[in-house]
Image 1 (tube, helix red, strand yellow):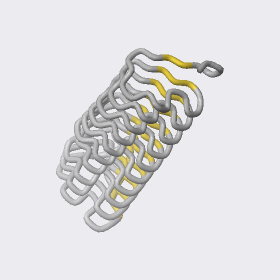
Image 2: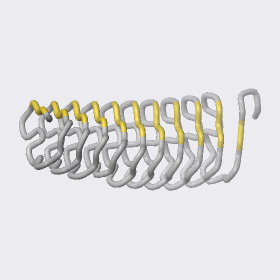
Image 3: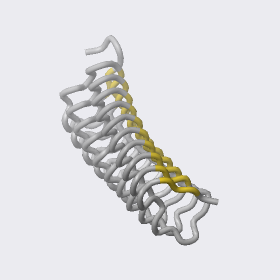
Length: 178
């Protein structure tokens, strides 16, 4: 019970079912990854066994081989390989993420440099944009924790809050604080 529309879409599928692949090269390498939905050119293109994924937008979840992730937007979670249970909404949201699991990135370029950082939440354009390896951060607002690279356990609420923080650990700022 699968369907594909587009050049090489679902081209290598063997036993996986309940799949929808629309767009050139969408789910191109998939063999046994079931219950995937891919809409857009190159979505979930190199996925072979990961299941339960949703990718909408050109190159969303492009290199993915994990399960239960959602990517909506051009290049959202594009480099994701084995990180499961992540959500990215917005162009280039978490696009460099490879193994950082259980992350949430909502907004253009939010968590865009994240590679291995886990359990980070970034909501707002360019929030946690420079984060690469830090974990357990929460950034709510445009450019919140934007320059954070390796500082973990931070909470920033409000546009531009903790924008210049790069590596501080356990730093919190709420609206109205400086």
